[in-house]
Structures are given as structure tokens and as C-alpha cells.
Image (tube, rainbow, N blue to C red; front, side, top):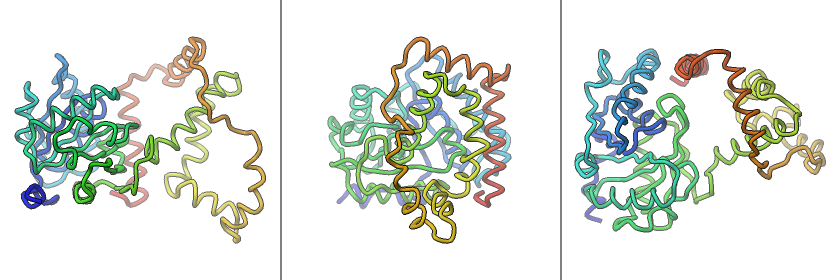
Length: 321
């Protein structure tokens, strides 16, 4: 109870510590900086700071275009960023911690325990894990009640969604606090009622990803055809209404009831293969080569800029900025 009473209210968080500064962690750093927070970052890699500054600098153009929050520096994203070499120092300064280490369960367990030991007891510790449940990861923490999943989507500095869910030892108050914090920080939040492996969005993405790999492996579709089928097909509808409302409209005036009654029997048709295909060297090479062809000489930085401009345009068109 004392930890709860001394916890900073979500709207009063000023310093966010980001542990891990890769693609996801660095994306979080850029986002929090754009929202006016002071960010303290830690990553054990020797070139972590250089990579982080490159990522933040690349993202800042899009974030400035989207609109910076009061307190963010319009001239330099690095004014409110401190990169420190010591994890204990980084955690000691935090009002909130976002961990974004690689998806390795043993690493997550050890790192979260280290973060827990170094962070003031009233501070919430959130993990960006994309698949592990907090119940699996919090087992070595002395204070597991303040550990929670805050699962973002790449790039975290642009995609609004965060899925929040606690583990078996997580306090319900911490789940509620974390959801409130992310909403105050400008995120769209799903507060999950219970842990599900892969959460919600990743499970749906995974089904599509597996079917795409099957089609490439069987020579049924190319990488370019698969991407075009989504960007110029269902993806346009999904940016406005999700798959459930999309199928609701497919039922015409009868809505989902007509859709299920009319097309329900086709659910038994063996269209999809939800088991993962074997990732053979041939399949790997086909996917890699297809992506290179589709990129058409555009660098990763070029593609990131193109993606970011498109996401901002969609957000603006939908009135979600």
C-alpha cells in the first residue's frame, strides 16, 4: 500500500527510463521525447548510443511533422535525452521504466530482476515483450506486483496501440495505472483481462504471416503479390474498421448475422494452414530476395521515411492526430 500511495500519478510522470535501445526501445525513446518527457536510456551494446541517436534523429522528422507536445525540444530531440552506462543509475532516476530487451526468456527474467532491484519500489516497470507473458518473466523479481506488459507496435513512435496486461503476481492497480499513463502519453490502449500468448494483435498478425510464408514456400504467390494484396486490399479497410466490422458489412443489411449464416459453412473449407511452415534455406532465400526486389534499391532509411509519411497521412485523414 505504501508503494501505491507514493507512486507518481500517471499525469505527473516526468522521467522515463528506457532499458534497451534497439528498434523498439529506440522507438520508445523517440516517442517519449516527442511527448515532452525526459528520457534516460541504457543499453549494454558498445554502439548503442550511436544507433539510438541515428534512430531518434530519423524519427524526429516524422514526429515534428506530426506535432510535438509541450516540453519537447523542436530544435534537437537530444536536449531531453541522457544515455547512461550504468543500469542502476538509469533506473534510480525513473518515474516509469519501459524495458525493451531482445525476446529471450532467460534474459528477460534476469534483466527484469536487475531492474526491479535498482528501481525505487513505487515505480512501475513495463515490458515491451511481444510474446512472453509477464507471469513467465516476473519470477525472479522481489517486487513482481509492479511489473506489467506494455506491448507496443513498430514503430512505437507512430503506431498508437499498446496492449497492457499483468501477470499472476501483478497488482490490478499497476495494470490500471499503466493503462492510464499510456493514455495520458497519447497512446491507444487495450487493457487485457487476462494473459494470452502473443497477446491480441500479434496472434492475428501471426496467422497472416504463417499463411504468407506457406504461399511463398508453395510457389502460390510472390512476396510482392502478398504485400500488394494487403496494401491495396483489406489493409485499406482495416485502417478504418477492423476485421470484425469489415465482415459485419460483408453481410449487407443483415450484418454479421447474415454473414455467419451465409458464409459460416465455408469456415470448414481448407483455405488456410495455421501451422507454421518449415523455414528451409530455400524459403528463407525466397522471402529475402522478394523483399529486396520489392524494395527496388530503397534503403531501410528510405523505407522507414516512406512508411512514416504514409502512417502520418492515414492518421490525419482519419482524424486520429
